[in-house]
Image (cartoon, rainbow, N blue to C red; front, side, top):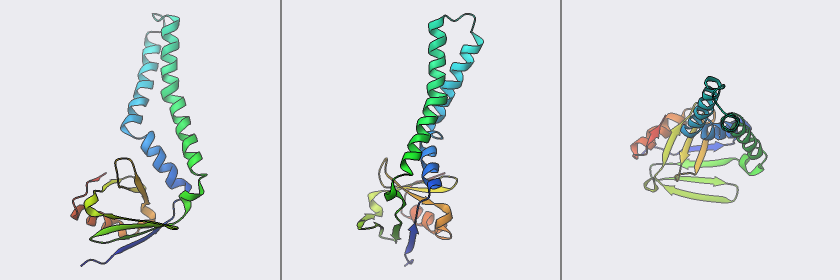
Length: 163
């Protein structure tokens, strides 16, 4: 029987910002919004003389929303999250062949592998999803040699691992 993986993770501002930016700006939706903004600018530039004032205003508005407002709101959201002290309380993980136990302060929860996990590998983070939208953020630099052990354990339990 493989021994437990014990982790103590303390998130940093950079980890939280990487997560928020990755979930918003670098997601498929974020890329699609960026593309819409660029397309609006291209249409505006290529057909400037043929467009009426209302069409120009609409195209400028679309470009502004997707290329300026959305990124600024994402930055503000990330900065707001970094001011929440509960996000910086260390989280202890005990992971074995049966379960994943998570403890933060007085709170303790145990997940069974059968509950279904999904792992997403990012540049600096490993995201461990326990539901469709709830994920634990595991910075790779804090995982060390346990990074590969955790991915192997996840794959052995049939959990999807996506890069």
